[in-house]
Image (tube, rainbow, N blue to C red; front, side):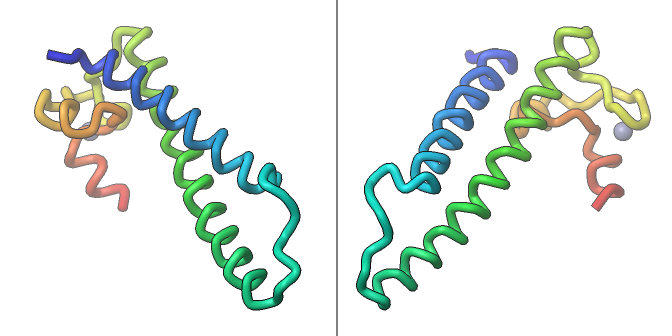
Length: 108
Ligand SMILES: [Zn+2]
């Protein structure tokens, strides 16, 4: 079975690739905006979607890197807030978790 570290590294790589694609989109690597107004409106809407996705991806990447750093400090399965153990089930469902389920739910 894939270890948590392998999962996190795979997640980090795919997030970085995704962010690079969004970045290319925002730079208009595939040409200038369509001169037709209706098309342009759709493009702008897409931009907003891509921007939201990019932000979400960036936040997740930060969390993934944070979890990787915690693992390197041998604290990968210790809750950052209460210092309790993060359950194996939670870590397998959410490899980038650095809070136990209780602390994570009280944070929202
Ligand atoms: Zn906790």
